[in-house]
Image (cartoon, rainbow, N blue to C red; front, side, top):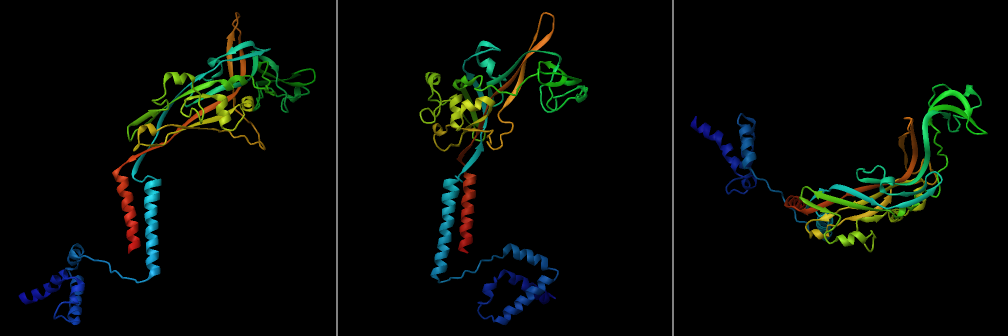
Length: 397
């Protein structure tokens, strides 16, 4: 029984001998090798097969077989592929994409201050001075500001009954053409069911509304506040990269209070001045302020912060660019510009409420801040180096 047990263990003991050595052991024929492999298969198929397999997985070591190919074409192709991989890893990953850095997106806050005075002299308002409180509506917006450039004024409106503004749905001949309590999409009020004279030549349906109703069929041209092109805005932008705990603002350290009082942004002469002339902003985008002021529009002031924090922090500076956001299509110019309505309310001594309705056209300036910062970090560096080595390893095999 002891001998039988020893014979059963022998194949298991030979598991420790690598295959490549079995064929070279002195005094052992190929028949012995075949016999040993058969015994090994029998053991693996038996009750001890699982243990043997686990033992083999832990202690066996395999190496790939390498073939030497003596060919100039194959060798040259191999070196070219290796050079391309090196160029990709070094040139693109590390130099261009800065694969040795970790990156963070900008967190930003913006505050604005508009300055300027304009003078108008009209039949409705007479001689009037306009300052910031008059033409910046509303006074505060998030990362934006609006400047009024044109105006349709309807003064002294009171609640009552009056003829509707003439159009295809309101012009009438008799009361039968008007519907009691009807409100259209573009109505100024609720119809009373009566057809009344709008002027000497036209009749329209009567409405309960703020009377007289607004007539906005004709927009003033040139713009009412065309002098707004000389207004200025101070943009104060604070940025923060939380991952690197780095913060900065667009009023740079070398900008003095005296310089700030006199500078106006110019791409060539004063590229870091945070004070902008509105007319110059519109012109920078290739638009005409005179034309844009009539119907209004939307402008975008883009502030880009792309910083390499491995360099001196003085190199981290803002870059400004301006463009029009509501691009006008001249072949499809439907509902152009930007406008809204605003009213000022009053009460007379008899407690009768009245209002002055203003349809305001103007330019809204949106401040758009974006950017990324990069700084050396060992983790992305090792990941990219490992990826490059792995690619070279694949080619070398």
